[in-house]
Image (cartoon, rainbow over all chains, first blue to last red; front, top):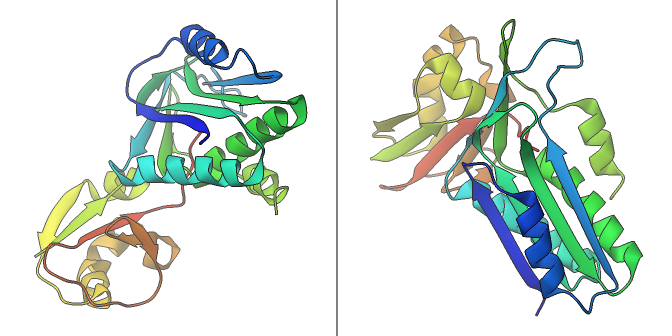
Amino acid sequence: MVWRSVTLIETPFDAAVNYADFSKRFMAAGAVVSFCGRVRPLTHKGQTIDYLYLDWYPGMTQKSLDHIVDAALGRFDLLGVFVMHRCAKVTAQDIIVQVLTASAHRRAAFEAADFLMDKLKSEAALWKREVGPEIDHWVEPSLSDAQDLMRWG
Amino acid sequence: MIKVLFFGRVADSLDLRVLNLDVNYLSQLCHKLQGQFIAAGLEMNSLSISVNQVLVRGDMALNNGDEVAFFTNFSGG
């Protein structure tokens, strides 16, 4: 049984503590990969972002995260996987998502983290609003996100 | 009674998160909401719909206590 932890959380979290706990749990693993996604302080047009608001569907959003992790576990030879994703208000420069993977050899851990992030960007049941001094709009899925997802077939 | 939920841009545009309606089919529900959606600048055809937290396409019968949600494509992470 592969160890897994999948959490949707409304408040900031300590990614260093999560990494330390995960790494300690998998001391015998040959590879531990850690990825953190942060809220960029600027839009692609250079407008200031104060915060994101991630709307979520209680129950369904958690199920979508679990489903994404199921897909990763079915595809990569992992010893453990950890996903923590923020929802509600997320301030610029805060960590919005953390993905940790552990495997016997590096390739599976690297690829699984990459796969998980591409899936989370497109298939996590979340809706993102960018808010700043000049902006307040809902973000539509991007073409690049769709292209990233297509890499996995 | 059917519990109807709205998320993201849909909730924002409608200024509404939840309502309860007495309908028997999904198509009937969509028909009832169409005017509000148009007034809010939302195209019903471009929205995703879930019934009891499962994405659906096309018409289907609804049962008392079912939960239907309307939202745009996901944009997480």
